[in-house]
Image 1: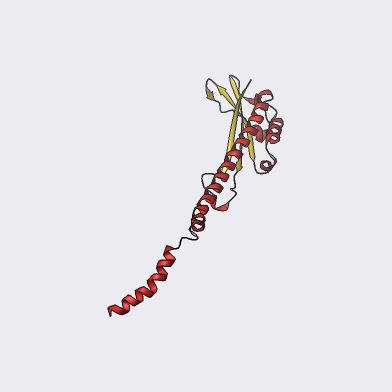
Image 2: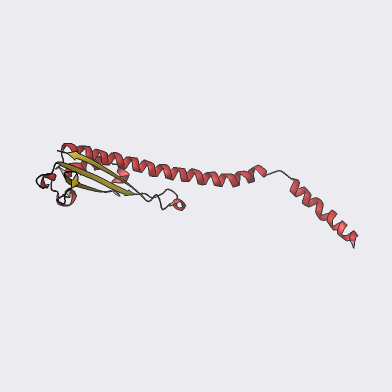
Length: 167
């Protein structure tokens, strides 16, 4: 019985050792494994960079609207126009913005704050005795990743806020 086993080992063992000992194609196999991981990392970095760039552009646009509000705090249309003109065209359709003011007296916000975006009113409606007025310009835009599998729940939108103290 031992002889047939040895014969079988000789017949099957040599080709198996020859196949396992062959080193051709190892580099291609390693590249296929590592390439998939590297491609995933590159696409994730691209999506993260796009999210950061969108956030920066939104912040710059809100800042432009806030700087206009410093000079013209009662002009809600002009504030919104300054904000919209500073936005890139691909963000203009998806961005939502709000302009509001806050009246402060003695360090605490009063209940008489007005909402410029809803009523087109000015911060002049603050109650008597308020010492400071602030105009708030806020905006948010949804973020959609380049590659669908990278839809991380942490990066779904960008938002920015600018608060300007006006006289």
